[in-house]
Length: 380
Image (cartoon, rainbow, N blue to C red):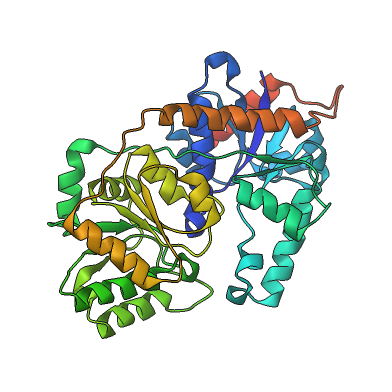
């Protein structure tokens, strides 16, 4: 059985990264049993493990990072993902979500950009690199020419469900009693919520009221008090009653609200591969998205695009859909896309990784790792 060491610690400050790993495990769960890898989580705490266990994948083990780093070569992993001990570069397949700091450098200090460049080059030194889109793959060649020859594009798919029968109940719980539009990004400066607020103010001058629901973490380390600033702008522009800032809410509630919305707005100034868009595609919801190349790479149906710096263009689309709901074309093949995510990732592992190095008395067998995992679960 193919053995994968999965380095993971739950990070609620970057929940998109955590959901990426959970979605990958969910994709493996959809594969036939003989294709499923044995996954060993290299995680610091039980909360991280529980977060992954919730998807129901049965071929799952757990070792603590201290246990792994004490004798990393001894573990019989065919591949390690997405980062690990520097001495494990020969069998580590890395992942870089995007190069936002090079596209939007004004949101980062010089020290932050230098640190990110350093970490990217550490990942380039592994056996291979996974990225989520053609856009990011092109960025590797553009910003780091010749430095990373082994790149695979593996497009991730969205997982996690919601109960259709509870959509109205969830809407009511959050005070959404009438039609509304959903914007499910973290409240960070590059997510471009300000454009949505400006578009609402333009609609207001035409006598058109649209309710927009914002969900997501309201803490952006780059701009202290950014969510407070947005709320002040909404007040000054006379649209505070048109906005609901719900903050970070349970994912099942967020997905229910997305499904119950008239459509989803994704106004972001930068993405590596938008989880919001994948969520919308999975539930067959309409998306009004900014004109990022990666958004256009992701969407080929149930969508409209607008120039990302043009509130008038967004307001025009919102005005149209305030009068007539967008028409949705049904797509029944998203389960295939989910399985393909798992297969493509395994193919990248097998293409790039050089497999276990140690053989002999000091190496651990698969049963040794299983026993260590059992001890960790028993003592957690």
